[in-house]
Image 1: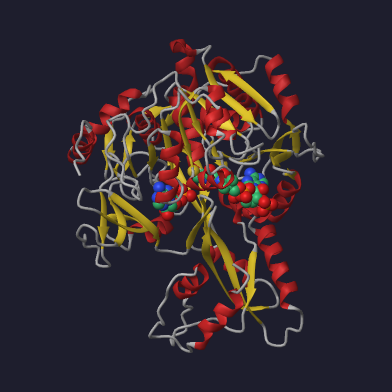
Image 2: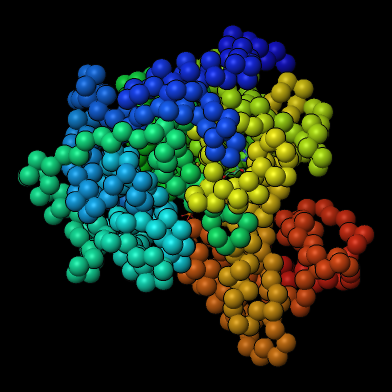
Length: 636
Ligand code: COA
Ligand code: AMP
């Protein structure tokens, strides 16, 4: 395959590796600095060096003020489109700045200052974007917690981040049900050892809530007063290396990892990506259909498009059922989006409801140029269907919360490379992606191994975990010296295309959401009747994978297994949240193990997925696998 074409990719990528400082110094010119960096990369700082040291900057200034000053005041910055609330609301750059200045001033009145943490537990409403930018404006560190997580998960994050303030809302809206946020918030605060000074709560008309006197404040009243008083907070100068946000992601235990994002590196990398990777120009309309609770939402609903002077769409709805499988095409057509970014799972859901693509043809998609997929491996049949139906390039790209932006993708702005189904294409600038064996030695083309990134990672990637340098080094840097371990396995082909095939740890990917099976096992094991358990991801036609829990009950338990299984399902929903989509708990007499006592997860998974499997030589008792097969009958 001729993979050179007219793309400048190879030249650009090579330069980013041979002259990283020159490359990123040039990219940094796209950012307005209060003081330019003294050094582009300082290897002596941080756990593996720091980018743009000595630089002073403000992320909110770059996202809003400079566009207002530069002639985009009346351009729409944010379109909130909510089929669930039946509303479309637009904010120009000037209007968004006004909102952000006021909320930032309100937060200052609560004593929030540079470096203080603020947790946002919010649904997909424009106020959430305002809150993120208001934190950035005053140098506070936001930590957004996805609304589909339960109180205990929120409590863990409160304890780790120790926020001065929490911003939340009365409710979220899911199809057919209103999700009350306030009881979850109250429970989380009572579970947490660290208590916030105050909560600012947005009352949504769909369901209001009671406010705790002395602790909770009504968002709208505070806003009204601040606006009437003409209160505005100025942009605080922060170091490029200061944290912009913490975003918690699943680790290999129930304790999530607090991924830290700095201001300078994030600004430069995310801004660079908007044209060079996504091919979007300032002034154009861009849509990322993720949730602000995920990294993709941070980088590409909020920061990327606004730093670039584009118009961003925030969507509170689903791909299907709100009201139908034409929802995405309606949004793209109505707002004239030129590019759209979502997860393959959404396309599988649409394809199931509208296999012929009838809805697609009801809308004018003439402005639409490119579809980007990420969050999980884009399976070739889904990509092929999307290409055929949409008649635009469909680009898979590979990401992690830790990196904050794409590791491997197909750079539309630099000139697209040929698409190979099943591959997210090639490493982006600054990423030297190697596939290595257990001794950290690179393997040849088309050979599976651990995918690693040569240090230093490019700007935008995490410098460390919040307050946990040692855990960061241990989890990511120690196994393959000189490299960052992605915990993804795969291979590179003879053209340098990366193929990401699956995780090497206990993480599973459910509808594009990253979950730890180890964390779920901790919950199952906490049930008084459970002696032993194993959770693994089994194939699902829409969500890619869903968790399935196998339980061995304690000797002497007399209750019906079905009753206990129901309690287990409810327990995971209560402790982890509905997002886990944990609906399958299966009681077995014993778990298949090796003679040394290791649970044979791989073989159980193959049986559950209906794939062919071979009897492991080390199995303790081969009959246990037949028993698993029996237990699964009619359940998956
Ligand atoms: N607040 C409260 N509950 C939430 C929630 C939120 N913000 N988001 C999801 N949930 C709930 C859902 O209501 C559902 O609950 P249920 O078990 O009562 O039905 C559960 O969590 C699972 O949600 P979800 O994974 O969204 O599944 P779904 O069946 O509602 O929808 C898809 C399936 C494929 C349509 C949906 O997962 C989807 O659009 N995924 C795209 C994912 C994505 O964009 N990922 C970002 C990475 S790029
Ligand atoms: P998250 O941190 O939630 O973004 O999840 C990151 C993980 O999702 C990665 O480590 C991969 O396992 C998986 N992932 C994300 N995007 C892709 C992709 N395009 N192809 C394959 N796996 C992906």
